[in-house]
Length: 285
Image 1 (cartoon, helix red, strand yellow):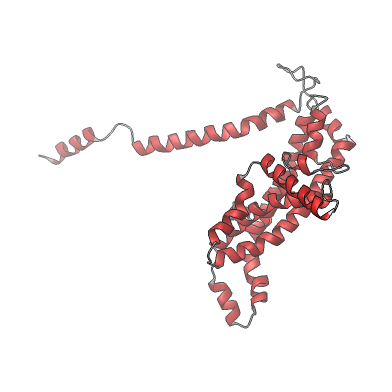
Image 2 (cartoon, one colour):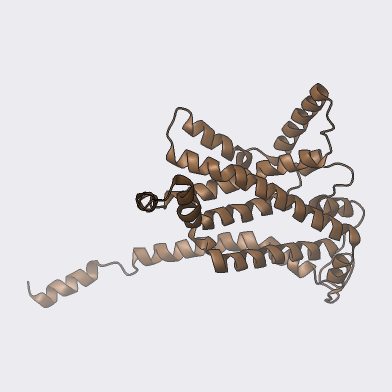
């Protein structure tokens, strides 16, 4: 058989379409559909926030920024936003103080019950928010009955619950950051005379800083936007933004809520982009 005949026979046997090419396009198409499915509600909410009419209807009568002005001029929303931000900051700080040593210890020590301890710290991500809120409320009720301390409806009880939302995010992302950390850097620092505390402060923590910041950011967002658990723990004078939005929707339905949602998303997105610019959250997330 000549060389030309062999080449012609090989071409005739080769498939008309490369299967790898089909697989790549199917994967890209599936990813595009998934992203569209996730982003579609956000796009509709953003579109709705620019409606001119008070009662949403299609097609819109026109577009306006009126609802954004009304949202930022509503004192109830502003106070609730500031309280949610303060609550999220306090819960994030406490959650990081607990999650950082827990991640350091569980990533380096192996003991009986290691897996149980790791799963326990991640449990708030698995348990539904309403179940977690009921459980914390019942637990705090029992403590108040036993100790006669004013726990229910207080700010410490609310912070307590929100700390549980921060810990799993911080623990998971810090652990992921520690997984790629080179332990020989610590050994080199100690061989040069640094003690364990100095090594932790000047070598370990700076190396896992992206994981700490990412955990804090995700924990803050989880605390800031929580509704289910906060409904059971919030007391008089402590109104979070999600609860303020829910109360507003009980009496009125207009694009004000959509504009508030867009502002929240914009603030969080800008904060994460600025943070990633200096800390490189993409290394962990």
